[in-house]
Image 1 (cartoon, one colour):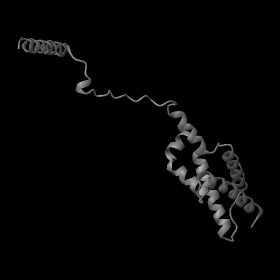
Image 2 (cartoon, rainbow, N blue to C red; image 1 turned 30 degrees about the horizontal axis):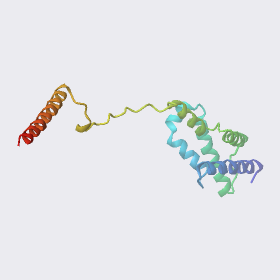
Image 3 (cartoon, rainbow, N blue to C red; image 1 turned 45 degrees about the horizontal axis):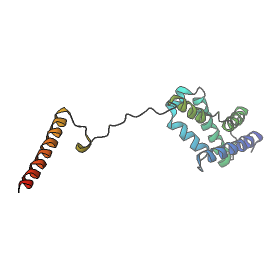
Image 4 (cartoon, rainbow, N blue to C red; image 1 turned 30 degrees about the vertical axis):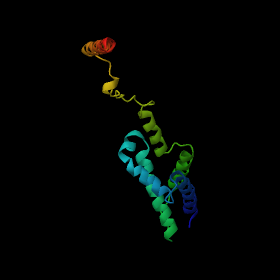
Length: 159
């Protein structure tokens, strides 16, 4: 293993560890790439470095796998190691593509929830205010009730 391959491998392990913690997953960088794929069209429109980061992460993952599983020399370049170092620091500062996308989505959403239209309570028949006709009917029934009671009292008194 050449020095550059070793540097890439070590830096990849650091980035992979952070990604594992971020996603609570054993898949690390692979999970990060999958998350980017889920939001690819949206992220690509809003984050300038989205596509570059996506392609670079796939490349360094492939290089890491080549280093880990094959004994042949890789085409690892200084740029690949520098990219991983830069990505590592952006992860720590939450300036990586997924963190920026998350903040962008929060900014797009309204800060306060929109008030929901309230449904009027359906009033039962006994709770309704009487209308004019209802008031007259109620008044008439009351007067009739009083007259009936007076009539009964007079009838009982004469006996």
